[in-house]
Image (cartoon, rainbow, N blue to C red; front, side, top):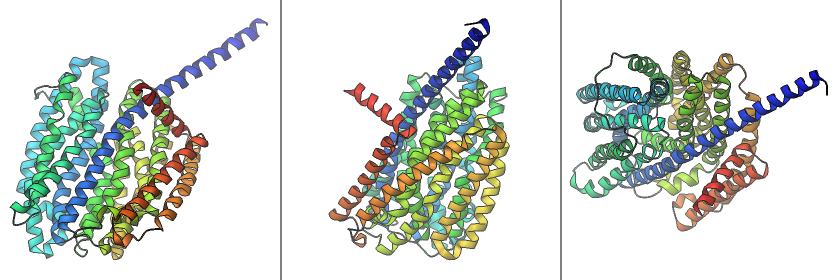
Length: 547
């Protein structure tokens, strides 16, 4: 071998070794994201099922009527702020800045930054709660102006809003705890804490419903109790990581200023879905009584899949994306985005098909009892079917937005968010004649619009995204999901769903969902889908470790 051949051979060997090192590093990152997402998904799943149990109890005792519509509007106001903060702006803005300070200046500086953010948040929340309680009637009008035509409904919604607004204080502090704990790779406690809210609301419904002339107040007490419990459960985990600090009011620092600068655009960008819900709730307040409750239940079913899988994966991926951005590894950042999106689609695509094809069996089994009737079930199911295709687009949007936040690109999320909100408003007005189903379709269509714009923008910003690989993966997942859920639909034809959750119907639904999950998982492993093989490997190692 001559010197040139040796040099060429050495160069090729070095390239292969570098590629193997890169692939090994990527695999380690993907494993960490998947494992972390699994922890978040597990506890989120418990929380969402507890939430379903809460909703079943609520509609069993209260039904779908003007009073429940008033409660859900009143609960929506602090809950929307919770989603802005707990699943949105504060966490998304805090993690990159905290990670950067910790990486560049050390743990002590990061702790000082965290204490300053805690002090800033306490002052902000105190003012926010004071304003919310004082101007509750204006907030209700902003969210549901149609209630003004029904003074009694407007009055109870206003008083419920005043009473429940302090929930924002507790849950926003929980959000800060979530951000700092996630930065330390601790995901379990923040993901599990919403379970306590659901248990508190269920317990207060059963224990206090007979103590009020207007029984809906029992639920409102459960909301406040749940917020307090969610905050208290964070304390042991914070203590474990040395994160129990007193608030600081040293806000004139570079990291705090950076957080504030990032947070407000992030608030708008991450909250587009919630802003769209506000618009649609506002339009829904002009529909007949019960329509807001139908919309709420349909949205909750979509949130079940979205919260368990999409938000779990995005939550687990953000700290890694922030680290890659801080290291200048833009190629690694895009590989992480591509993997996170594929992993999200692996779950949300079959979930969307399931909600579309067996929406009526699911809604009937969950809600057809007590004061919730067959007509209520049908309208709720139709709205759920209209929401379902949007599940995929919202999940893809979430991972794309995380990339922009990791890059500290705030303008993109603001611009795309603003345009999407306008599109949703126009569609909502045009489709309002179809009542709650029309409103659900307007959200789905506007969500897809946002996703397409974000992906195009990401392509222009980052160049190669691996879109061909992503689209190929989505097509394969869609075909397999369609086959699996059609099987579930055929099984569900053997039951009369107008009878509600009879033993036979429950058995058929369990068989249908179980068969669809088995066929999808077996098919994905047989066809060697990347996401399925990774999940199988992690599950196998966990079982092996346990045994």
